[in-house]
Length: 563
Ligand code: GLN
Image (tube, rainbow, N blue to C red; front, top):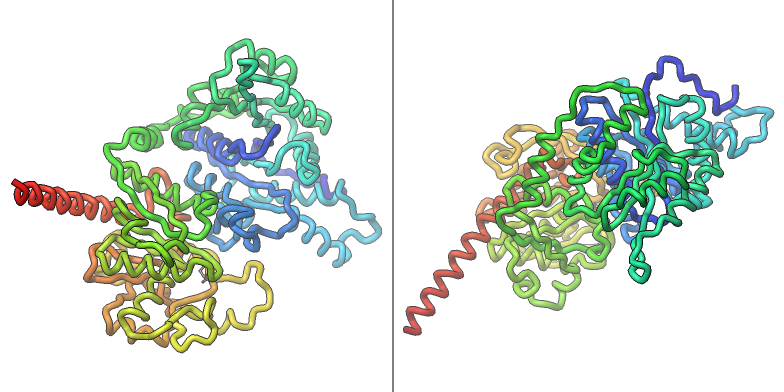
């Protein structure tokens, strides 16, 4: 059997393929996720998949400056950050199956070849590589529940050499599925040229031409534009691109990405999509979604929070943290303004100045030595000035090091990640991490349970005794120092029972000082903000208010004295 001829018996799932043209960074992930939301809001069972054209097996070994955030799924896969958009928009968990890379596809095909699965054949891009890509697309639909629709986002831009096998695969697969069982959506750019005072459709025409040469005729065009496209422009695009004029949609810039599904719905994309797929559904229900968008767009106030990180120039590195603050802000009806501070600056500048006007501090995760001392100093400032503090992963490790050094008298306490011979390795590798030679996919990854101490901030936030949270790290709090740290007041309020490892630390004599070894930002959703982000923002609002009050009374006092 040809590898491309995969049996589709019993597979009733419909497919939506999303490609991108003209330039990168058009927001294809958010657009795809928004389409997912349109379907999900109609009660359909929806899953999504990202095809990544790079040769890395996964993004886990890439620098955040290169790739942005590595999104970790429940089952511990290190994936593209678009999976974060998918989870936030369709509010369903993704898995290892929902992201495939060229590295993985080739790895599988070459392993099969060595095993002898293709004996006698010359192994080629078509049909073997394309066949494996189709297998992966089928595998998503096959996961536990039968999905009504699977959306497949093809990474890269049409015209890239790397994406060719994927485009060929969606062409072949579309042919097998037949019309009514799949649609192709192409996202393009329609730029406004100031000197001509016109929007230009040529780049879109060229991009669609290129797609059609490969054999893919888009059913819908989504045109990114900074202004609404008038009827004539849409008609021109439709004519030149061989698409129905009612199937050309403009996708404007939005205040919040969560507004995009609402705009698409208003423009009629949801209905057209269902018609083309021959699907029926109940009336869409966007009520909850609408209410969140309203709260994001019309906050009643602002709270400023500092983030002391290492990759602050590339905001995509902290995508899920940023979104978690949007969700938590919406919950409290406020806008969370983030003050990004390069952690290294704490090593030479006054923390009070750097964090002026900030009602709280978050230290995110990270790798490598640069900035670690700055993070430790920042954690110290938050602890000693009663500023609400939230540490995540490396942020928690920095807080433990700070406490060991400055409260427990362990001079130069450190993590063995940065000081392998420190006398006080309060953060250290577990024995099973020590012997590892391979870097890829060998961290503690994915979901682990955690038991919470009753009466702790964490317990109050979650309102339950046991939780599960996602991980991505190698180093842990060293159990050898737990007693000493505890005696001096550091509380371990979350423990992974399986390995007896510290998951959460807190300081009882502080308004809100909490840090976690896991990554809560991966589980925050617009309609369900993560409990820790929610309560951290709540604590910042409280402390901001008391700081404001103290400031006002100082001012009053000063005027009285002057008078
Ligand atoms: N570098 C630290 C470790 O590997 C923290 C990782 C992180 O913050 N994600 O344990």
